[in-house]
Length: 249
Length: 252
Image (cartoon, rainbow over the protein chains, first blue to last red):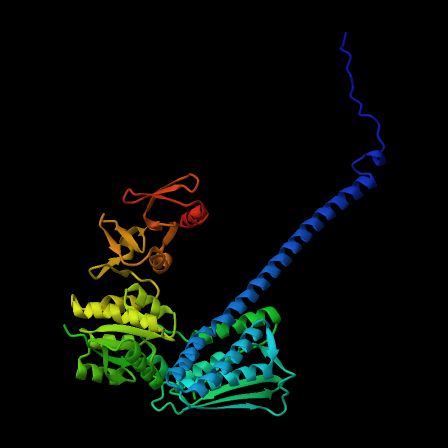
């Protein structure tokens, strides 16, 4: 007698009843996939935003530090010059230079809090700085600040303490090295094709000669490098197109 | 024993020379300024002409620095007190070689102290100061290999890598070398720390400064303890423990 054979008959199903093809399941799956993707993108975006914010802040604090670096050099030279006046019994000059120095310090401290300041502010600060430096040079150098009449210095803003390092360089490396220290520094501000161009010209000994004289001190013209770096950072964070150029005449 | 000391001033600023001259006149009358110069060229002339015992030497001068002058002179038989307005690399090199200096604007008390120190050296001329070590350090830019440590007898020059650790002894410091030698330096621990902190040294305790490259092992504890390459066990203060661990892990 043959064994009874059980035939396996799959239960009858209606394709539309399969849970894995029903519309709600499909849409649930699609929705989940999309929301997963969205979640991934969103967190990634948030992370990038945060990174960007941190980078920006890092740049800004670096800028602050760079700005601060430029003054110590000059501060002690100025104080030293004032000490000489006192020791030399030049009371009136000592008194007036001390207050001039304080005014300069106040301006610098004030300006360093801001990313940009009016051109007029920067020029006033520069004027004070040059007056103090002429103390050290015992009046042997002349300076001239020339602003194009078409420019309104109160209306134009520039990054603070940008021009001073160049002037300091011109004085220290260029004119200081001259035998008789009879030097001239000319600072010109003009408007060229809607770009503000500031040129600092000196009749000092020139870069090659200055470098040769300074080879043993390991003293770098850090002011220039610092400014270059500052300009780079400014361009990155503010989308500006600042540039600098040194021309040997 | 003569009291007067023959000296010259080399500084590019006329006002600076006059000022220092006046200050010496008022605060250190035993110093006799026989000549002044405004730069290297003139400086070399007056030194050869007058053979001074002491030179007040400005560092930053337009047509060459004070260091250039020393290089040109080679052998020296005078003491030098550097003057500078800037606390920078050059000053660090000077401090590293235990040379004398004055920061501008000049403080009268510091001037007096510096002169007094020189007086002691001039009256008991031992080996004349060698600026070779100093000039070598200068060339190496920021990595000073040899440090000059002042002791009661003079200045001992050691290679930084030879120093295992330093321990405070009041206003002096005991310096221990890997050769098991040790000597007492007439500087306090904080001063030594400021010189060596950029050369791989860490102040792990109020009284201990150690060379991280000479650590043999670190044992945990409240602050912990460190065994140095010479076998000495140094206690770490609780507050410095984290910094130490950070530095140790960073170098792995």
